[in-house]
Amino acid sequence: MNGRRCVVFAIGAGTLASMLSPAARAQGARSIRLGIFGPGSAAGNKEWLSSFVGQMRTLGYVEGRNLALDVRWVEGRSDALPQLAAELVALKVDVIVAVQTPFALAARQATATIPIVMAPTADPVATGLVASLARPGGNVTGMSAAVGELAAKTLELLKEMIPAARRIGVLANAEDTFARTFLEHVEPAGRRLGVTLMIHSLRGTDQLEATFETLAKARADALLVQPSLPQRRVAELALRHRLPTGAPGQLFSNVGGLMSYSSSREEQAQLAAYYVDRIARGAKPADLPVQQPLRYEIAVNMKSAREIGLAIPPAFIARIDRVFE
Image 1 (cartoon, helix red, strand yellow):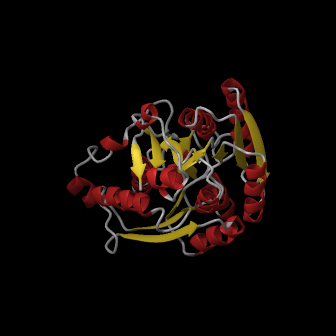
Image 2 (tube, rainbow, N blue to C red):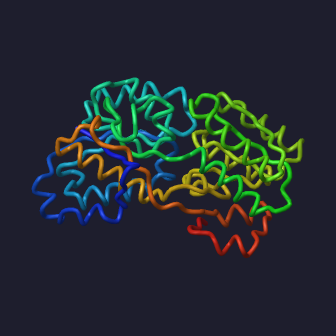
């Protein structure tokens, strides 16, 4: 079984359905049970799941007929990851679709045999999820997101949205192995932009409120957030403190965060379905290259902008790809 991703060559999500006709794919599709494992809530991930299920249907898999889903969304409970990953393994799912690095790592720690599709994760070679992008090895494959580069770009976009910003807070997730790489990209970006970064590495959600109080006292002009932190809670605190906040993950703006820059979540879902289909048809994760999404979007939650009283420059508004209300 297997999932897939690639840097040597790439296939856009829009080409997936055209590789075979729905009728031809349905004839070869077998029954499959999937575990879906990621951050946030059912409400925040509704659109992602709808895109995923829709693409699975196009590929010949229909819920209640030959597709069963066991979904575990984890809202700000990092300590629950090992238990929930073990639950999916105990359910004997055929494939685990893991969204974000901590979830893929928890899944891999729970099983060395069930295929795991990254949908996506940050730098899977550096975090040890795969041996290489071209030949992943083991039971993990899927998509890689250049979250470090996306974080640096998100910082640039925050500065564009708020040209007067001089002091920008940064929230890193110390429980995420990618935190170091995240900061390694953000710190030089801050120097290029000429802003002072106030970096806070957090362990658990109990530090969030105190950290926002500290940022408020320091008169932070904006905030950059590592996306593996509990995004809904961060968005709520940012609104309370009227602090413009961005993250390199579209879920953030969907759950109330001001701005995000990331690969298209719709494309992520469609590519995840493609990997699952390849696995169901006998491909092995070890042999399937890791692939990067092709489409990237600036998303802004306009309701949040109004609540914090932010006037977004017209030139920036013209660049927005996706609006949440």
